[in-house]
Length: 329
Image (cartoon, rainbow, N blue to C red; front, side):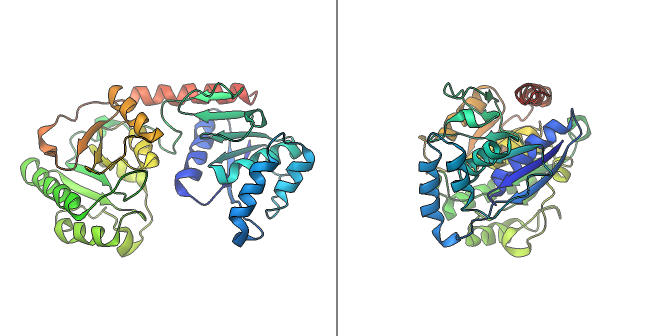
């Protein structure tokens, strides 16, 4: 199967789409190509999004062609399936599918679009208005659970560090407390940290962590603002025995959980409890997929023995089965 992954350029989105393709590849032969959606007039992005939002109502061939007129043309002759994630490409995916007859899958919430224009619609919560809805506990990711038996004696822990966003706000005091707790875990339990910062990490906060902790860290650490080393998260997953992730990022949290390793999310005092993702975090905690910890918590005082590899394997199997049924394969 030849798959077009329609990308909005946001890694957290197109990586979910790649995750769907990789899950399908466990059952059928798959070749995928990531194609970034490009507006002809990027300066008019806001206006074009509003027009697309109106055009997609009672979508027909005429309106679909109007939607596609905003974008540079994509050659669909070489594709059998379209996968998209994110609102910015949702309208384009619906239009491409309607005009070409190619089946499409969208991952994520669709609030303003008639869901019948998607062959499969993957969400974390049931969407009763979506006739082709597939509900999955964990968003699709590129990563399979690793064999923990190979890792459990490794004295390495991974810290996936984000930054302000999704109702979360970090200050220097938060990072100071985290640095103290990471150092304590190193001194008390001899667990060396691998720290991976990201584009959302404030440069001053990254510099603080680097100055405080770099001498303790594994050489696998990646400091986004210092070196821009390509991230091979699967390689790191296969080295560590524990994962800690700042919980403002739905993507990083899902990827950590997908590894099947003991995962803890880290939150500051300043965080919102009103977002949809926060509700997912509470659900993950109740299901023992994660342990939620405040930055000020002593990391050495907790047990990290919950393994969910078998659960994640079953979630991926169920998602694969449901997608294949929807696209009639």
